[in-house]
Length: 267
Image 1 (cartoon, helix red, strand yellow):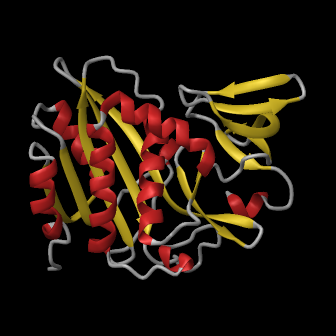
Image 2 (image 1 turned 90 degrees about the vertical axis):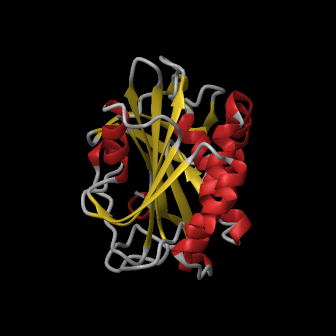
Image 3 (image 1 turned 45 degrees about the vertical axis):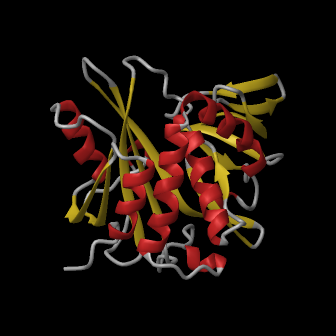
């Protein structure tokens, strides 16, 4: 069995976030699914961070499969309680900002964001996916639990031309080192409440990978609208300048694609 890569974090988290439980498993289907089930069953009474060496049923937005192996990915979920009925639609964007800033501090200063929840690295004139965020919700009588999952490639996966790892940014760090950077950044952002959330959203545009680019808003492969990607509104909607005027895209069920020659490399 591999060593617990969260052990260097435990003392620091106990000091800065003493109510947060920290758990590590060698293998599971999905850390998000595990925490959602625990929240719905009433087995969570405080923030809980769950990391795994391997996920066999990891997934991203719209049910997409997240492919990983036991050595080259950071796989982590955090369950965080909010008051019942809290609007969490913009949370994934704030999480992306906090993670990107933590990666910049590690030296991966080229990391940028794609709406609503992807972490990208540049590759020539296009972009490759470094990681992603998936926020899901479990409602109980006492709380609305946000289960925030994120996956990040430490090394570029072979045979996946649209993916990148931290090695592509010249960063050779262990899973333990990357978790030690990302988990406290995420906890710190969440602990800061609405003020930190609003601050992160205000910083999102500066990290926007596709700012000023021609994009297509798609639903299951059908283009709903096209125009120039501008940035986000204060509540996290994507602003797109179309021929008919400015469109605000809010639905997490749609996909964003670059138009033109770079589109295939940026999916």
